Image (cartoon, rainbow, N blue to C red; front, side, top):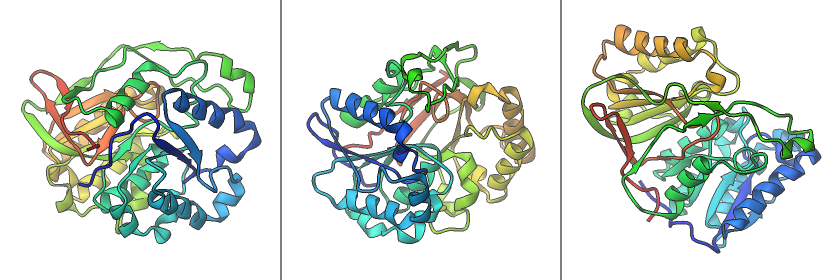
Length: 344
């Protein structure tokens, strides 16, 4: 996998809207500006891609313009990293306009999650590492203060090369949503919940090492059958990571999507599975039961390591996961370690 250079103070980060055009809504000005200010306070220079602040309607009507921003940012020698404004539900519409040679020939740090999962699979298809991590309008614009847990894992990945990096459970979390259109909420800290579970090692006894690949489970059906969705053999030895969005898939749909992965033989190919905390811990126990039902009982894979309730994706705070890089799951010591850097 191709890697980008590490992010140093003075480097330029481009904020981009590849999915929903929420950043272009007037009421959201304070959030992208807050994200920009925070990134600049860490020593980076921040720019916006040409269409980053176009309206919701414009960006919906023009997926080619979103793709044009991505291709342009990759080819711009003055831009060192790209961070998504936010997710959405139609990034798949960019696929016809993506030049994979451009992605391959200009490897740069690319960061985002949720619907940006599809962008990550584009990068993976091109053989380039990327980071499933914080977005501008959400994590970098967190009310009052950015979470140290989120910031530290991000900076450790993009600006350092000190490995292994242990993935530890956050001591607290939140899924509370305070209306972004009420600008006064930027001064209200979201209520945190004490972590009651920590990382749960649901099954597996061995130590495995594999390359990370995954994202938001909700987006997987949109990619299946396209050129960016890996064939079963391409999952060989990978560590699949998955989480669910604010749509909060009910247990039946969660189970159906797992069975879809099983039918493709993916669970038979991977070496381990990391699963994020369900948003708001809705269906927390039900998802655990579904995972064991499909993978253990229906697939007969009782030895496949499964680690549940990690902090990534649709909760706060979150870790950053380097797609295309190796991770170690040590079931006996109950440890998850990032052992390969996405930067050179």
